Length: 84
Image (tube, rainbow, N blue to C red; front, side, top):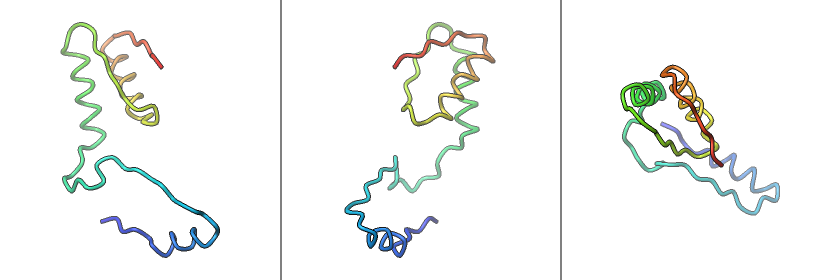
């Protein structure tokens, strides 16, 4: 139910801003997103019940996801190696 605040965007534009560029993953997807609790539970389940090496990729700005992976690794007694 989010509505764009066009008045605020106009106000920003009146202060000399040439362009405001933003991005949002799945912004046009109208399906209900999965909750972070559900994702954390899935990550933990994966770490607990899948033997062997698990490779996880995530955008660096998603600190919560990185924390979920570290928490799952700790709870399932796994080691973590971070790569840039």
